[in-house]
Length: 122
Image (cartoon, rainbow, N blue to C red; front, side, top):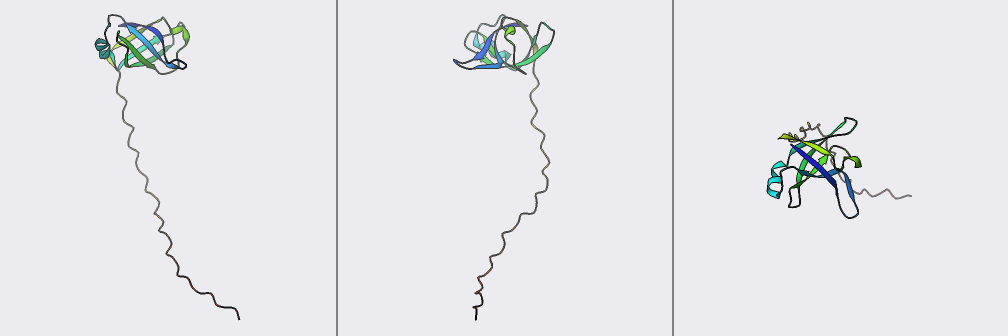
Protein backbone atom coordinates (compact mmCIF):
# COMPACT_ATOMS: atom_id res chain seq x y z
CA UNK A 1 0.00 0.00 0.00
CA UNK A 2 1.25 3.48 -0.79
CA UNK A 3 0.62 6.98 0.41
CA UNK A 4 1.79 10.49 -0.38
CA UNK A 5 3.30 12.94 2.11
CA UNK A 6 1.25 16.12 2.01
CA UNK A 7 2.87 18.31 4.65
CA UNK A 8 4.34 18.51 8.11
CA UNK A 9 1.96 18.40 11.04
CA UNK A 10 1.87 22.01 12.06
CA UNK A 11 0.06 24.81 13.73
CA UNK A 12 -0.09 28.44 12.86
CA UNK A 13 3.38 29.23 14.15
CA UNK A 14 4.87 25.83 14.95
CA UNK A 15 5.98 22.85 12.94
CA UNK A 16 6.66 19.35 14.18
CA UNK A 17 9.60 18.08 12.17
CA UNK A 18 9.07 14.39 12.86
CA UNK A 19 5.31 14.28 12.19
CA UNK A 20 3.76 14.32 8.72
CA UNK A 21 0.30 14.29 7.18
CA UNK A 22 -0.14 11.50 4.62
CA UNK A 23 -2.90 10.83 2.11
CA UNK A 24 -3.36 7.12 1.44
CA UNK A 25 -4.59 5.86 -1.93
CA UNK A 26 -8.20 4.62 -1.72
CA UNK A 27 -8.93 6.00 1.76
CA UNK A 28 -11.34 8.92 1.48
CA UNK A 29 -13.23 8.84 4.78
CA UNK A 30 -12.25 9.25 8.39
CA UNK A 31 -13.68 5.83 9.29
CA UNK A 32 -11.67 3.98 6.65
CA UNK A 33 -8.48 5.85 7.57
CA UNK A 34 -8.95 4.90 11.25
CA UNK A 35 -8.27 1.27 10.27
CA UNK A 36 -4.68 2.24 9.43
CA UNK A 37 -3.78 3.49 12.91
CA UNK A 38 -0.81 1.51 14.25
CA UNK A 39 0.65 0.47 10.89
CA UNK A 40 4.30 0.99 9.96
CA UNK A 41 5.36 3.55 7.33
CA UNK A 42 8.72 3.77 5.53
CA UNK A 43 10.06 6.71 3.55
CA UNK A 44 13.12 6.08 1.39
CA UNK A 45 15.35 9.07 0.66
CA UNK A 46 16.98 9.65 -2.74
CA UNK A 47 20.21 8.37 -1.11
CA UNK A 48 18.38 5.08 -0.29
CA UNK A 49 18.25 5.72 3.46
CA UNK A 50 15.05 4.70 5.19
CA UNK A 51 13.18 6.59 7.89
CA UNK A 52 10.54 4.55 9.68
CA UNK A 53 7.35 5.84 11.20
CA UNK A 54 4.03 4.77 12.64
CA UNK A 55 0.50 5.95 11.89
CA UNK A 56 -0.75 7.52 15.12
CA UNK A 57 -4.10 9.00 14.19
CA UNK A 58 -6.50 10.36 11.61
CA UNK A 59 -6.23 13.93 10.33
CA UNK A 60 -9.47 15.57 9.29
CA UNK A 61 -12.47 13.95 7.64
CA UNK A 62 -11.06 13.16 4.19
CA UNK A 63 -8.95 10.10 4.95
CA UNK A 64 -5.58 11.71 5.74
CA UNK A 65 -3.52 10.24 8.58
CA UNK A 66 -0.85 11.53 10.98
CA UNK A 67 2.48 9.70 11.01
CA UNK A 68 5.17 10.07 13.67
CA UNK A 69 8.60 9.28 12.25
CA UNK A 70 11.61 8.17 14.27
CA UNK A 71 13.50 11.35 13.40
CA UNK A 72 12.99 14.70 11.74
CA UNK A 73 11.99 14.62 8.09
CA UNK A 74 13.67 16.73 5.42
CA UNK A 75 11.61 19.13 3.33
CA UNK A 76 12.33 17.13 0.19
CA UNK A 77 10.05 14.41 1.58
CA UNK A 78 6.94 16.53 0.90
CA UNK A 79 5.17 15.14 -2.15
CA UNK A 80 7.12 11.88 -2.00
CA UNK A 81 5.62 8.39 -1.80
CA UNK A 82 5.78 6.27 1.33
CA UNK A 83 5.27 2.55 1.75
CA UNK A 84 2.71 1.40 4.32
CA UNK A 85 3.14 -2.10 5.75
CA UNK A 86 0.10 -4.37 5.77
CA UNK A 87 0.69 -5.46 9.37
CA UNK A 88 0.48 -3.28 12.46
CA UNK A 89 3.58 -2.15 14.30
CA UNK A 90 4.50 -4.14 17.40
CA UNK A 91 3.23 -2.56 20.58
CA UNK A 92 5.82 -1.02 22.85
CA UNK A 93 6.58 -3.24 25.76
CA UNK A 94 6.08 -1.94 29.24
CA UNK A 95 9.39 -1.13 30.82
CA UNK A 96 10.75 -4.11 32.67
CA UNK A 97 10.08 -3.80 36.33
CA UNK A 98 13.22 -2.64 37.98
CA UNK A 99 14.27 -4.69 40.91
CA UNK A 100 14.01 -2.47 43.88
CA UNK A 101 17.20 -2.16 45.78
CA UNK A 102 16.90 -2.55 49.52
CA UNK A 103 16.41 0.88 50.90
CA UNK A 104 18.84 2.13 53.47
CA UNK A 105 17.51 1.68 56.95
CA UNK A 106 15.31 4.60 57.68
CA UNK A 107 16.92 6.79 60.23
CA UNK A 108 14.80 7.22 63.27
CA UNK A 109 14.65 10.74 64.55
CA UNK A 110 16.93 11.12 67.51
CA UNK A 111 15.10 10.94 70.78
CA UNK A 112 14.65 14.36 72.22
CA UNK A 113 16.96 14.94 75.08
CA UNK A 114 15.41 16.41 78.10
CA UNK A 115 16.61 19.84 78.93
CA UNK A 116 19.16 19.54 81.66
CA UNK A 117 19.71 22.71 83.63
CA UNK A 118 23.30 23.84 83.34
CA UNK A 119 25.26 24.13 86.49
CA UNK A 120 25.36 27.66 87.66
CA UNK A 121 28.73 29.34 87.81
CA UNK A 122 30.03 30.07 91.25
